Length: 436
Image 1 (cartoon, rainbow, N blue to C red):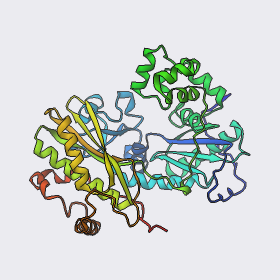
Image 2 (image 1 turned 180 degrees about the vertical axis):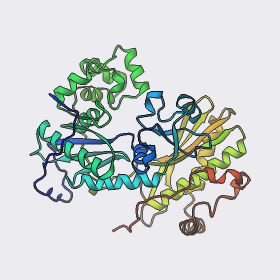
Image 3 (image 1 turned 45 degrees about the vertical axis):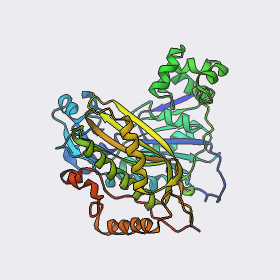
Image 4 (image 1 turned 30 degrees about the vertical axis):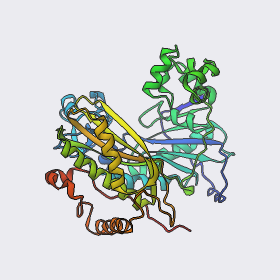
């Protein structure tokens, strides 16, 4: 069964406050909503600047520098502009667009206020990204009609309070809700049960299934699996042999089945990785400059790890050349770390092993396999050097007071004119609290 709604209508569906969650208990849900803000960054700019409304808006980094499109308004998309496109190409496709330098703090602030709005409807809110969130409703909300009524009111309040549009998917689980949200955009509302999910998505190409990326879809097509329906009817043993444990799981997903729990924000969700990347002002094949940029990125990643109280043991580098070919290489450490110099040693080794000498337009560093920082343990290969630990924390305090570029690694000073190009902004909005 499926329901589609084109005209949001305000319906007074909430007659009582949501019950308080029981600590430690995982609530079962009758219906789940996925709220997906429409062209979020561009729409926030249009909502706050009336002269941008109704015209193509492209959000990017510094419009006067080379970079990529961060977000495009719905007025810009008919011209072929999309996120990730080089600004030079976007200007060619849509020369009369308004280019706006992005303001991450503003978007995060708006996202936090939206989450606060969602908690008026249910305490079970799981942020999925800065512009998406899952909302779980109790078992008594067990019909598509009831879920759609709530979705209509959420859309109306978002429009009234923020002058923004949202597309909402309603379903019995996170998978169905997520995919339903993309059926109608912008300001769409689609409610699907598992049978309705099959009706809508089985005819579609397999890459449209949540969890199937381009490379996996290519492998599936080589086996004759072209549509989501093909995947639903493929033999589970054959999928397991071809794709491992993920094969049968994706077959279940093709039927609209998903047991992934909704994790409300009051339970807390630790990050899976932390990283920084930068698009260079111009392609560079200067190894000294590239390694200096890599050093600053590693220094910043280490600072973020310390600031938020995490350690990690997998370091990855991301290199993108002028042809937009991207290489990502990673290496696991023997022990966890949060120290920038240790991250840099590994990242530099990966860079030297995998860079072919071609000019690069983007360099990035990520640390993953995170876990909370242990209390009172030596976690790094170099942690026996207490002076190094004390120095890092002293530098962190200086940067907290004077800004991110107040202290930088000495090896990066030859790139003084590029210093501000590496995006060192606010490290985190999260407040570090002592462990119990």
